Length: 310
View 1 (tube, one colour):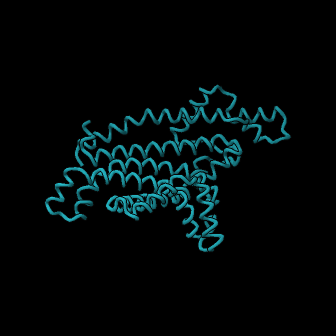
View 2 (spheres, rainbow, N blue to C red):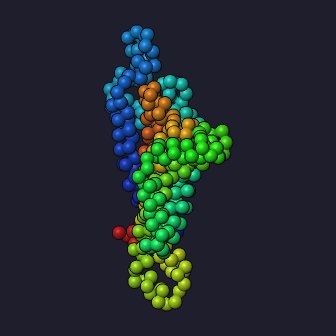
View 3 (spheres, rainbow, N blue to C red):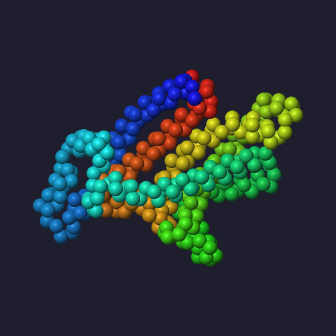
């Protein structure tokens, strides 16, 4: 790894700091715009106005928004996301207890999407306009078109209700991960397959690939040694964006399959107007998306040195 690449990576990291600050600003004020009063919800239907106001003061909701934001940032820098207004437990604890389940689900779905998406994209690019190409194209269009919740329900009906092969939901067994992972990965898998096929077809028609074939190199060497690496740059971009998007898709998938992750925590917090939990989870999603995009940007510079000097 050269000094040029390290400098490129450091510049990208520094450039991401203002974006991170903007993310905290947007998340904080958008949460405050949600309808409903968490103090009223926490006090209960029979609470008096004085009791509701007392809770509102305890939560700091009576202070001006800039002051609330300043306190939020001071606590955030110290790693303190506040306490849940429902359970009174620290938000970091609530997130930490649910995060492993969501991380496992998202990582498994990403692995399925990347492996099957890139492999099938390479295969159909070398078999253009064959029955294999048409079949994979139809399946990819289905994966892009079918909503996550509907695809998940269909998988549940077929493999859990009709065939009794896999659990319909929960996390009681290792096999419980199979159906939600497939449902969550469908869109990303189809998108990566389409991007890989398109990028490979464009590269396979370049002059240097024709030259490699003219030299008598085998088709396998031409595809995997000469064409694949140059085709991966746009695929990496799509893969990074899809990996981050899977976290958002996990919210729907977790509710469909009763998976006890961050998505379920967020939905419950929205129903209870639990501001600190909503704030913490949305901030986590936003920062994850930012970090994944930063990693993709840096990986770009590693694969193609021209990008470092542009």
